[in-house]
Image (cartoon, rainbow, N blue to C red; front, side, top):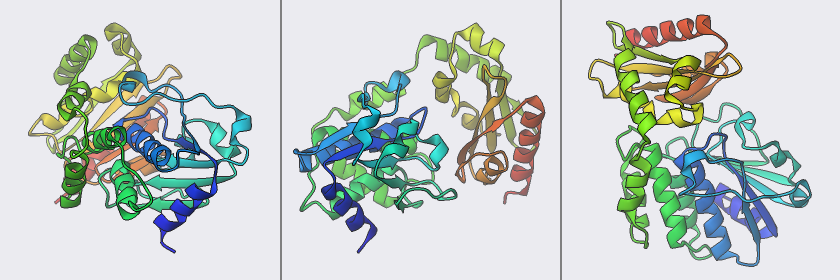
Length: 315
């Protein structure tokens, strides 16, 4: 039995299905989570299907979360989407379910779950969810809302088809999703919009990028800077691509101070592999897009030196 058949059989088996995603969600986390939920609801209207995981910050135009109790997890199937390791799952309640399925496109360095479908060749988990539908379309139904959510996830994780993970299959999936009724142009505008304070923070980032001669770059956002611009860490993903727009930059790190004193580290690259750096600092991710934490500025400095080394060694 193929992995997709196993997943479909588990979905059929359970009356209640609770779908989680990763903390601090991005469009692919919400798109894959919500898209799968919509497909299951349309295909099996008698089932109870919930999407959970706490605040979605400024992405509530994509999806909002349901409220569930601990008791509701009894005899429930739990599915996680777009979540590489268990510590990043949105909410510890997932442990209360009867069985746990994982659907993801990140490297499976920290396996979890009773069944895991991981396709690292996919541009996004939203692409994987569409493949699941397509393979079993005699039993599954796509809806306009599911298509909107999956399309958002794909354009979010591919940077509107800019990143190397974009394949001909990605374009094919996107083209099939566009056959459904939703306003793709309006969705793209919503995903591209930023607030005035983020625009002003973007100016600070552009003025304060540190670039070495090899093309390694870093930006440190201290707590003082965040306070000055009245920006929360959850709002900073919008500035991550900025260093990469500079021709001279080959790989970069954004180091965001946290109230607890450590730094959230967001690593990006145009070629040099940087997820090995993230793994050395208790993180992980894709070869060109990863994240980790630095306990202090000393570790920030170490990570930046490792970025420099990765860029110098890249050919």
